[in-house]
View (spheres, rainbow, N blue to C red):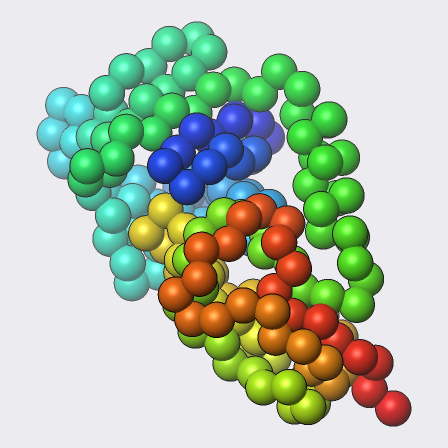
Length: 170
């Protein structure tokens, strides 16, 4: 697995990628994606995630970084020098509050699937976040009752920001 630090308009991320089965497997925080890449020109590519096709162009490749253009955005992936420290930081953010759901990345809240007082089970959708033109469904990791919803649709959120607080279901 190769680790990169992604500098994008939505913030900085740790991205881990490896090739296998004709796909590129990408891990971004807790989210994992299998991406099929197709070359469409000398520097033009299409990434396929499920039914979604994302066109991008390769701007520059060096031993330490890759720059791509995605529409109006220029993103740089730099080979991570301290990936162990970044992973430790990710774990600290994910476990900041054991009774809450935190955003794994900066982005914008697209929808909230729960209300205060609602009971949720493990795997139930709670919040949908859009980051880097991709939507991520954040799901409950426990059986609980929603105690507080701390964001609204359209809110910008930071990586690690508390979104929803749970109270343990009885």
